[in-house]
Image (cartoon, rainbow over all chains, first blue to last red; front, side, top):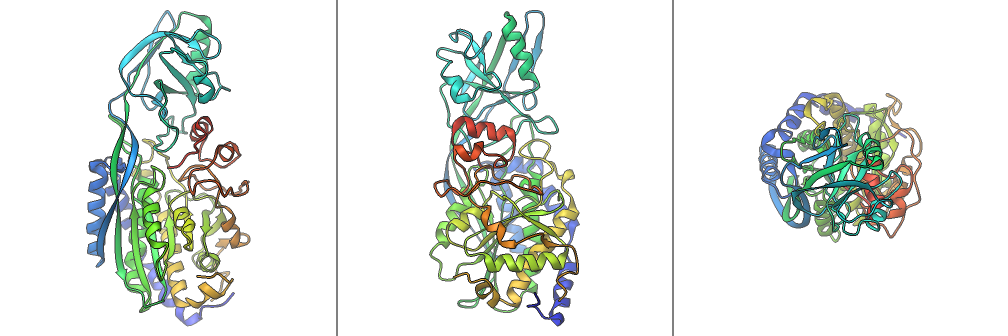
Length: 419
Length: 78
């Protein structure tokens, strides 16, 4: 495929040569900093990150606005949970985040409940904490928990031994529910089956209604009916817990950094009349709510943009994952062309992020993901984000935007999309 | 322009990326070199999948979140 002239490529290569992994690493370090507190939607830290990003985009010469939207029932662990167990001969204190976590389905129980430990489906539930056996789901465990003090369910931890934090998931149930690591689960099961074991814990988790806000920036206007490129990345994280930082560096500080850098370069490198805008999205971790809000507005746009979303550019493993939706055949062809030019291997794979909202709204959208050093845990730190990965993804994004702009007609004609 | 300047690009048909959409599972799942994905489910939300999807192989970012999704039937996202 040779749709772009040889003579035009030096201009692209000059842009690509200016991509700075160091600049992006600095952005990630800032976003992962303590003052932003993990950037959970609706928090002070999230607001601080939004303000910083807005100013960053203004400094790039963009006109910047924010648009808020409601987010309901965001889970918040509001105190360090207390948990310990005894086997009759010794008491074992447990570490929040490693040994235990508060399950998303948990009721809010601030006061510690102490009682004998039993096995769900085996022991009389009333007055006991009940451990769900390995094969038992939480839904099934509820059926055996009438009058129980609470439930314990096994949950795998990550490679660093941390529980994942999720903001979207099961609805709140009637009992406190504690996730225990799958290392701890069999020890508890043995103790419970032996009799005489006790469990003591609280579950300080509440649901809060908040407002999220997207940051929108217009860097270049599009000619009427002309190509308009929208770069997106979510800036929110799952947020810090009390006493437990969760910096959200790779997910998705790295994606935000890539978009910042790509926007800086494309703002000056695109041909005239090609539009360029950026959306830094909130509420992705709560269910891709920021992009849902934005996509609803774009659904009826006279000149819908091409959407390039970056979710995780922290640690490349063999190839970057690409998921596309909407009338994206032409965009995919350009992305492939850009990847060949920049040397980035691509694989079709799930990028379950904001790109899906735009695609569902009928826009041509691609999501690009290049791995995460940590995932929703304290191990997602800035020092584990690979600047070379960010640079490679940034070059891919810049080349995609540039090649699309250099031959915009192919986007609608190459494979027959109706835009 | 030499399209084979580097070993980049899709290993196969780029339009395969269009068939990924509709998988349930979590936002932000790490990419895999090879994937086995179920057919898209039009009834699923755009990001959060159905119970059946959550139970399917490779549709969720991790066993922990997957367990939650299966337990609740609400899928997982974010």
